[in-house]
View 1 (cartoon, rainbow, N blue to C red):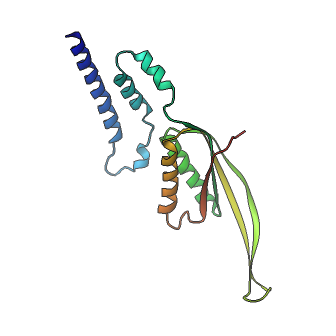
View 2: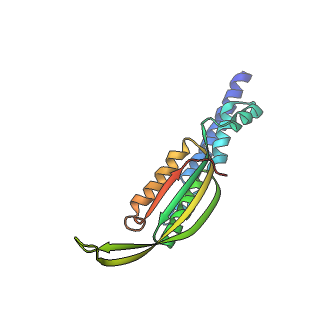
View 3: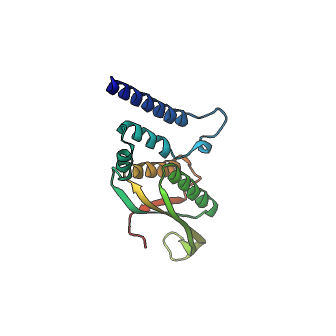
Length: 182
């Protein structure tokens, strides 16, 4: 009888933890933008893990400390473009996505712009038809300890924003590199 009560109590606790996660996921309200509701769900997921493991909470907490998936130690997201305000807003968007996915953003920085001159030549000659002065801006995000399942999600959101924005971010590009950062 005691074992039945214990499993019944554990099932109730698991149900309550799942309901807490469900209510935090579906908190959307009409008229509010979905980006204002973004937040990590780490505490709700951890509560479900602890309840699902059983009555031995310390063993469950020790198991939850070890990552189940491989970790990317360092990811550098490099953004380049010709329009600085758009590039900066895109970097801010990726920073928010990383925070939502509970990815540790170690550093964000801008590099000095690169100035270049491009010449357009007349057809079949070496005469200069037009000359353009271009400025290339660069922003970087340095991410640490990215869990393997979250890497494709982050990349998907980065690509989705770039593709769905149409002409807004068409002059920007995003490159994600994995390398030791020192």
